[in-house]
Length: 595
Image (cartoon, rainbow, N blue to C red; front, side, top):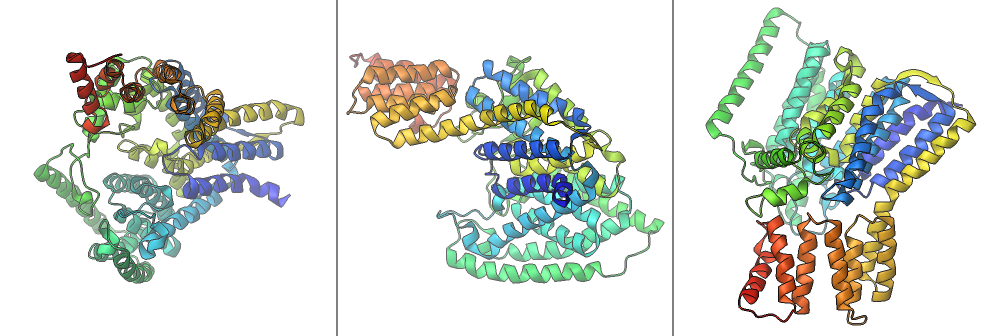
């Protein structure tokens, strides 16, 4: 009975912890097993707890996932659209599991604080002990990324922790805020710092007890700033591509400084708080105003650009958007040409290739979530996104205490997603959607009979299959590339049956038929053509066919395919198709071809 009572709290925390530590970065490999665990948890919760109240708040998010799936029909990248539909459905499942924690929101906030503290501590440990992040590469980035997989998303996790720390206050909250701030500074994430400023301002505006929270923030901020300043003079901690012995030496020093900073935070937290007077409030407002003016002056002096920004320790002071302005313009241009339906979920990559001005400018997302959904899914997709977030955020700023801290996680996610690719990371989506689901629900639940569970089981099995099939197809196609021809053809057929939208099964089968042991070049070329028919807007399908025709000794066929390739990706690297196109063009113009 006690296990049953604790399950509504344990299930969302377990899911969140798995996503934070094993979410797999922006890859889709974790979606199927996280989705499977979420589905099992939902079925068990339905059987033991009943149907939660407030589930209607998730309907727009479910509709958004369905619209992503429908967009496969016209998508420029249908396999990517399937992945995006699965990812959106996974986030709806996170929120659905969170519904069951409606009566345990205080414990949920405390559990999320512990999980985020563990992620931050593990991430910082990678700076102290190099083997934690020794990936076997000569180049090791100085930007801390931890198990989440990318520095910007780790910065967002630190923002979550900072909000929860302002709720916790006192020693626990101060230590959590200290960990969050040191981690945030070492990510060099400008978007993460800006998001932290905004959500802290929201907390102070709506949370009450501003003096206690401010004391916690100052007690953590002062040592965190000193520790970060010391880290910046340790090349093994804050400079790229340092030798292992330098990382060991400076890492140990940083570890000692980190511990001393934590002790200093606790000591500062014990100091007597000032009284809440009018003079103190005016002083705080003056400091905040001066900081805002200083920021505006800094931007005015340095200007704002869109060029690339190096990942060194000067990154945080750069005022360039790191191509973001360019990507936003590309997304807007793509939307204007496909207003109603867009080009399909997850397809911005091809818009970027079509409109970019340099081969350096390459990305998969425009780094702005509303603009991305507008371009990929049209006005309908954006409307569904806005509705989904509005339903989940309804009444957020009327909350207080731990509920306000939880309510600020989804706004932090959305604010940060205005400049980054957070939708691609289950690690940072899980805390936000679990918390939003818990706050959107009502504790009351209706009992579900065993007979009524049967349709739910059927839907869960179907949805798990939808999650699993793209992953299985990827595994089989990957094995096909390395197998002998006969086995490769069998594996490619199996992969294609699992995911007929993916390109790898086509290409793996083409390689198998082109193998000298099989020697069916025309059949191989037919499979390259089949891949083109599957994704005619994808320049890679034309490049693969053109490269094969060139290697087989058919310059004219190669020219036909490579010409379309450079039309769809006019700024490709010369070594990645452009040089081959020009060579085939020369041979065609000089009639140096036999097929």
